[in-house]
Image (cartoon, rainbow over all chains, first blue to last red; front, side, top):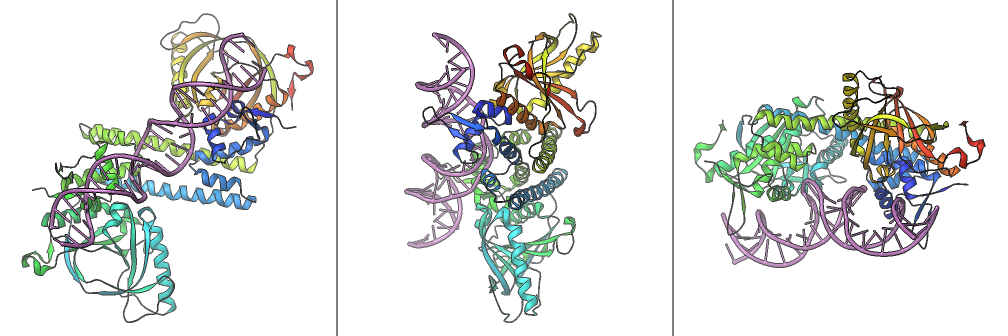
Length: 282
Length: 282
DNA sequence: TTGCTCCTCACGTCACGTGAGGTGGC
DNA sequence: TTGCTCCTCACGTCACGTGAGGTGGC
């Protein structure tokens, strides 16, 4: 004999607000055991209390309602635990991201205008194995990792050696929309075989303003700011994608302070400018 | 000579999306250095880059835009740092809350239906020093702490001894709306003086179903669920506020597992029920 | 000159909260 | 019987994102 409870009683027993319970009904996360057809009164069963307690905890952990539904509809405990653990792992990632941002904030407050050493560099067309894909900015690290894994797999299977550090091309829209078609590449020589998502690509030649970023990715915008300011002040900006070269990464050392990334901003060729602006500029 | 940048250039340099920059302009968080009166084109100065970098970090830490504005408008570094530290402390609190929720989730998954030991208790009117206030559920711990601090201060100044553990009254709406007029009370004898927010109050007499909650507050809903189910199944619910007694709290021991809270649910008096339902019921 | 950049609405998202206005049950 | 509980819209919140439709600058 399971008692039926009004929404108010059920709310008090579960510490879920009446508004939230009605919302969970609307979106099918927690259906009342019965609904009076004439009055539309919702009736909950006492046996629904544990489900409500689970929902409350998952929501307190910011799990989206769509995923809560997946957890509740899981066919067995294993599937349910998998869905929950996936979310907990995402929370861990988020926490690590937050720690990095706090460190980055402290660094910015300590020294808002770090010095910039910028070099001009002329690059030839660079033959590369590449993977292209539409990527969102907050997912770019994950996407790059999987792309380089695939390219590296192909390299080792075909006994091919990369001839320079891996990098990526970011079209201008990528920063303006925080999403766009990114190209992950690894420079190679000759005519290596391709497979899967990997294609052979000749990166365009051109003139680049290059600045070395020392430290974690969460500070990368500061290098972009310095480099962009440099290019804008001299009015030497040119068409084309921004290029990053990953010289020292997570795969080399777990210490983010040791990481090294080259940021390359396309600029107008020397020929069209004063010949005095080449070389290293402080 | 500060260069003026288009919104697109500024976006690339700061890694803030164009949409976000326009929004920050609309709400007055980051005003462009100039706006073309005919074309409405926004122009940003290179000197605004560090401000944008600060905004990005604060937003990545989920600081609301209203507070970001406070940080940016701070008259000096001390005020600015205070605003930022306040937010970082809130984040710490939130993290602690998250850890508690994860523990609570694990406990629920390990044992979804903990056993309930419920006792019936008849209480006389209980004279108390009390503070009443409109409180939101997520702020209740903080509010209670400040209320008991004030009552305790009055007690020690007037050399008055409490005669029972502190507690609080929660009207039914408090759980349904997650907000309501809460009463924090400390039982006393006689006619102690009152001051500030503290008033003298006689808690209503009545019959209560009482269950001891052992553990942290984040698990309190499980005791509510068990107690509410018990009351509903026997159909003995009565009017009146739910009462909590804080027997062992943070002030006694930092270990939440040691905390003890009595939850008291108003029920119909014995006289109106079968006389066999009194005493401890398994 | 042509396409790219920029503009302004207007609406959508997510998980509810906030009333308004009205009915049902003890 | 009276007030309390419950109901359904409709709209608001927060920080943007997503188009639509149109203009300006190199």
